[in-house]
Image (cartoon, rainbow, N blue to C red):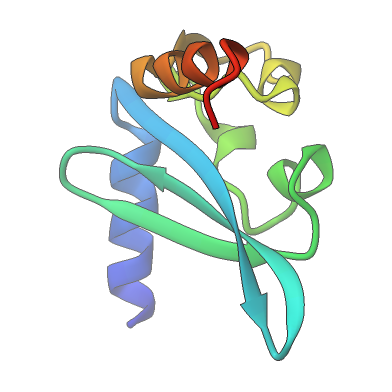
Length: 104
């Protein structure tokens, strides 16, 4: 199993483009964040009690070691990583525009 996880991590870290996002989940009745980093072929997931920079800098995160183009939702914590070329997710932009217009 460790060999598979290492293959996934190395593949994502060497990819020219990756996507990252996070979503809230319940673990043992408590709120955690499921952090995702993926390419068209691989997905890496980890849970953390925090959503932001603390989680993204943690030993579980791949983002701190990534140097390619990262597509994300423009969550402010991502912009702390200067070695990444940032690209904003179109689906998140449309969602934000829709919600900003008072649509709920």
